Image 1 (cartoon, one colour):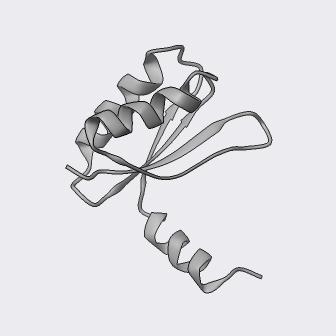
Image 2 (image 1 turned 90 degrees about the vertical axis):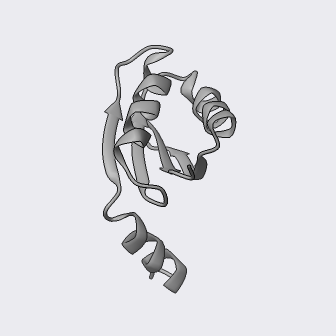
Length: 89
């Protein structure tokens, strides 16, 4: 059973812009994240997926440098990395 927080989180991210960088090598996922964040308004969320192992450190570093917020990140059972990025500026 889901907690109340999980249900609220799912509602918040249900409208996230879904962007795939699967198959892209560095710096592709970072460039894709940059372009995707430009497509949403401040406070909105991008759900980026990527397969390049380097993105596990590159996306959080880019987010910190650009002033964006990584709300959550994880690696799924297929080895795909997921990042929920909230546009902060």
